[in-house]
Length: 112
Image (cartoon, rainbow, N blue to C red; front, side, top):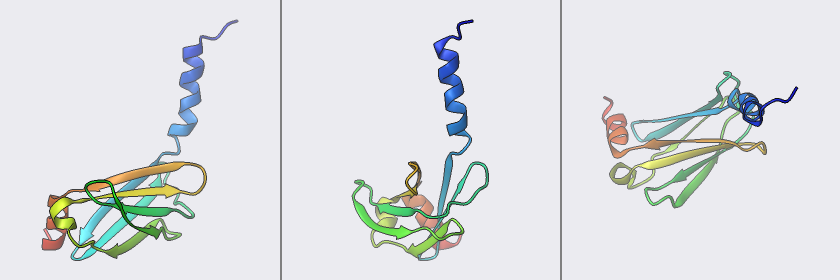
């Protein structure tokens, strides 16, 4: 019996999708908080958080804590342009990002 190539390709994608990384970032006052976890609920053991400006220039990096979170002071000028928060976990290539818009930052600084 011959199995169509499209069916095989579709099945090959399922395991990878089951372990997608999810990233969430938000601002509280003058602090950026980042949370990362896999779609299964498992927390990453290690990883790197990259903070980029609106022109996608790397500003700084941080290590993610063993509980899948990290916090750092709000970058000067971020309220005007926003930030991209990228998280990459280990050597297995899992990564995701969150965009903090100027509106998100202002809301977090204002406490609303």
